[in-house]
Amino acid sequence: MKKDKNKFNESKCNFILKYEGEDGIDAETLSFSLNGVVKTIKSITSNEYPDTHTKLKIIKLERGSFEITLSTVISYAPALLPIADIAIKVIHNYLSYMNIKHHLHGQQPKNIKYENNNAKIINRDNVTIIENAHITKNYFENCTFDNSISDTFNPLLKDVERTGFQIIHDNKIKIDISKDEFNNMSTPVIEKEKNYQKKSNTIENIELALKKPDLLGDSKWSFIFDKIIEAEIEDKEFLDKVHSGIIRNLYAGVKIPVKLRIEKEFNEEGLLIKDTEKYFVEKVNGDIIEPQDRQIKLNF
Image (cartoon, rainbow, N blue to C red; front, side):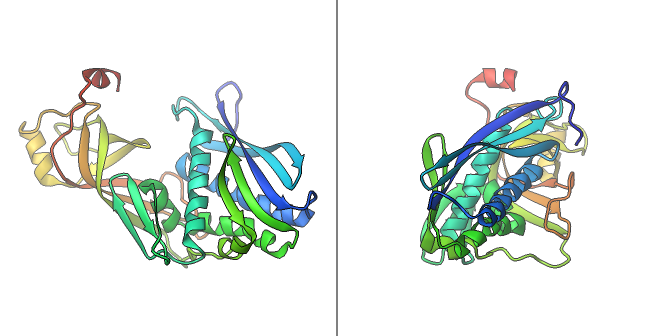
């Protein structure tokens, strides 16, 4: 994406990587570990916001262990992507991916249970954490995130001077990994599949905010699902009720409980191919949910 300062805005978010141990750090350790961090964050951004340009800047170094303050800078066109705080959202996803990786202890999960917007991830020790369903599905369907986090910790595993690793955001320690956990963190859990191109996943029950319906035809409907999406309605019984006027309360701002299928295409490296996401409403699960505040309808 070619950058034009007159047409693009910048979203920024700072965070700190703390390599615990000696004040100094081996240059090769730092280089390879940072490369894993950069790769993970860029993969998150390209997956969630394809029409953006991402770079990470080192803006501060501190001694006493070894601390690096990084700034994630994401350039985007507000006309194409009218979403504020993109960089904060990306770092939130990054921290969630790190938390999932830490929770797995270097092994496949025992079970994952999806309900609405949440996912319960149960590890082999029968410990459960709750993460966002969208973030969780992205992590487990694409080996890139898991593998690049492993790349972050591989060099730390080999460096005897490193005693721990922390990520600090908003003056709080968000991720805290001890030296004896480096082996688990450097172990790939999501293996790369050979020659796969397309993957689909289904969210059994999620409430989608309606943006724009098609009340007469069979074209795609617009919803809000972290971003604006176009979804094909496969529930013919629901469509028949809409077209015949039985269901009328369909306007921007209402929520529809649905079973949603998401299809994506990936290249040989396991990276999402731009503009290949497709959304399908397999089933409408219940009644239309109208906002209590009618002003939401006007402002949506």
